[in-house]
Image (cartoon, rainbow, N blue to C red; front, side, top):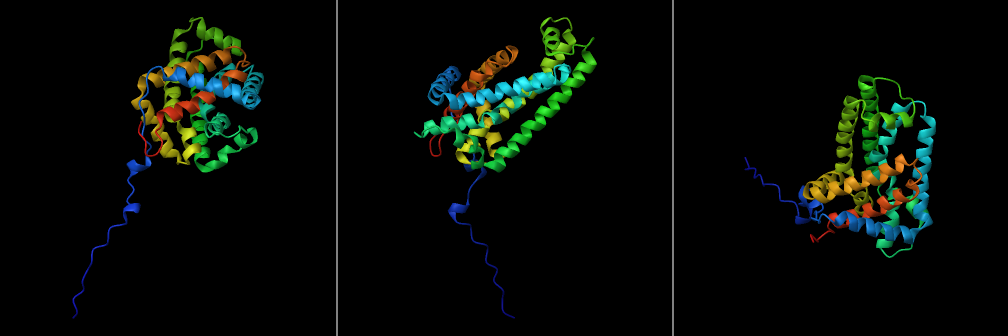
Length: 272
């Protein structure tokens, strides 16, 4: 009987030996003052894009008006949905990121192109939006539970909600709501620091974008928590002032986020 010779399988070509690490972009470390540099760059883009950026600010402002009008008599839902601004914001800023990318490439900013830029990576951006929406829904439901457990009387309007929080007359409610809100906001921020710009710019999948975002936060704790505080302060003040400042503040944060991504995520083949 002829001897059967078993030959070991040949190794795949070098081009096919791609490690998971090679798929992950390198992260740069930035200084504590970086967020202010991002805001300055974002302001320049706002001036350059003008009405194009204001279009997105107008959409944010109108959405705020709509939420306030629909839920004026059900403030606990308004509270959760308004908090959702902080969750879905990175996805809603998608068009603004594209305007900054156009300027970054030396192209003329186009509102029409920015409206459809999600088509550059629809599956990943859509999945990411679904994740943020899920977080927003859970946060809204938890807000209702906290209201039911800790609220001592009805505050049916947004004004009543603000009074309850800042009067500090019901500290268990205030501590519970802000504590839970901090947890959800931290999760949302960690996975969205650079996710959408990365997916749009390099067409990465959702999970790579999420892990890259978390790594960026891990390697830049101080500047990125400062960045988060600035976002909360700017957008929070806009919400408190009847949403009107969102006309300007939403585009500003969106443009600045693009420069945060460019600063934090190294280009392929570059680490500094």
